Amino acid sequence: MIDNWPVPTAAAAVVRADGTVLGTHGPAAHRFPLASVTKPIAAYAALVAYEEGAVELDEPAGPEGSTVRHLLAHTSGLAFDEHRTTAAPGTRRLYSNAGFEVLGDHIAKATDIPFSEYVRQAVLEPLGMTATTVDGSPAKDGVSTVDDLVRFAAELQAPRLLDPRTVLAAQTVVHPGLKGVLPGYGHQNPNDWGLGFEIRDSKSPHWTGGSSSPATFGHFGQSGTFLWVDPVAGAACVALADRAFGPWAVEVWPPFTDAVLSELRSGR
Image (tube, rainbow, N blue to C red; front, side, top):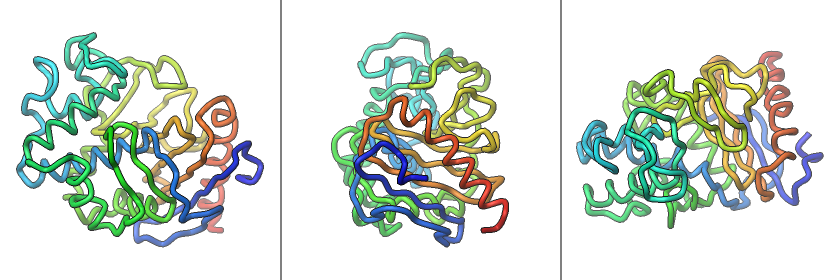
């Protein structure tokens, strides 16, 4: 199926919570720009900082009235790509690269460690993600491989670096009921997010499959990348490509996910 994607290079894998890789396709060691799939990795580092006591989720960060939790949940009121406030914190779901950049700066100041280095120490090195870097913007400048991201996807399902309750909070809706735009898919009501992870719920249209459970969480990126975890299916999927997100992805990603879920259900 991936061989028919209109992209120069693509790789994908499916992984269980115990790290068992159920299947791979394409060059799993090829390094791809992640674009916004960087955000879940950055969010995980932020949650490590929270558990280490370097920051609190409800401490001030970003615009007046905003907190670390608001920044993680895209409810700080910051604009998409500009460091300007366009809404009061907690009132709208405004997907914001700027918010994640403010978050990275906040954690760097709290820990006295550059955020890229903090991510390496807190997440990448412990998980053995040796081919991954998060240099530049914590919103979009990560580079990784399928081999590395299956390690991260297994961690999301069976946490070792964080208390499982923290990861559960990250995949639970923060500020329920807020409307907003899901980039590439238009207005969603509600537009549910957790702490750095988008939650599928009943969104339509969506980049996951029609058979994906509402509990599915993850992220996609404008570089043609995605990572989802479906707790009902008991598995996660990573797909990386080197063609910018566009109509091609809207067309091929959902049936691909549905095919993966069908195979999982059949036990193949």
